[in-house]
Every structure is written in structure tokens, then in C-alpha cells.
Length: 171
Image 1 (cartoon, rainbow, N blue to C red):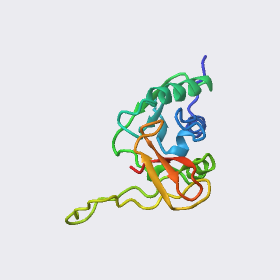
Image 2: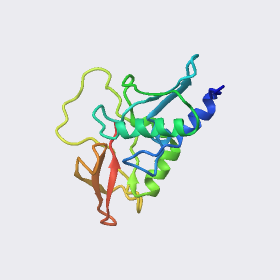
Image 3: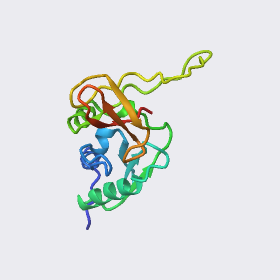
Image 4: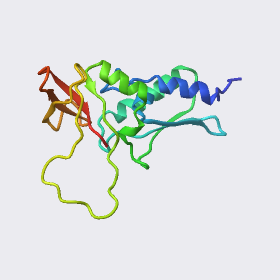
């Protein structure tokens, strides 16, 4: 007789350890894309992931890795679902995730933009808050490219220490 593993806490712990393929210093839990892990009454482990972008090219790798790790830990039936609602926001990055980004020279995002109440004012220049350099902490920084190595990052440069760095875009 085969024993079906149904410990949801253990399953969640395993899924939480999967590294993000594009930001390997972060786990899926750090990044906030691992939404939920549950076990159905039939014993299937279901893990819900929300991509950082609807067209995120890393989602297939994330799904495959979560599935492989859960199956490797003895869970026979695994389903990894993509959940788009509510959409992912940079507010879901954990404090630990933000610390790891900065530790690896990537500026973590500030709070996600909030919809304005009432009329939206016409603004002809950028209204972005200052992005602190992850190397020296200076806020005299500038965006050099809206697109970095991945679609969720932009390229920035610090005017104080002159070092380039990546910045996780606010969503």
C-alpha cells in the first residue's frame, strides 16, 4: 500500500525554497509569487503561483521546479497553477527578499504605485521617488534604461559612486 503524503506545511516549506530562475538569490516565497499551497481531499498538492508580469518567461521554469521538488519529496500528485487575480505587486516581496536584493547589488522597489483618487494631474516629467544606490546608499541616481536583463528590472546609475545597478520595477 502506498502512503499519500498530505502534510500541507511540509509541502509549502518545500515550495517556498524554490529559487527564482531570474533572481536566484530570492526564493519564490521571498519574491511573493508563491501564493498558496494546499492539499485537496484526494491528496493532490496544489501550488498557486502569480507571475510578476503576465508574459513572464520564467513561469514555465518556476512551475516545473516546484513540481519536481514536491514530487522528489514524495508527493505523488502535484498541480502547479498560474493565478493572475489579483495581479502580483512589488509589495509582495518580503523584507528578507528586499534585503537579499540589496545585498546582491539590486535596488529593491519602493511601495507599489496606488491609484489616484479624483482627477489625475497632467505631469510632463517623471514623478518617481528617488531610488537609493544599493552600493553606497546615495539617492542621486538616474535611470539609464527602462529595460534590464529581465523585463522586471531597469538599469540605473549612481551619480555619487558612478556605479551601475539594477532596480526591480514597481508594479
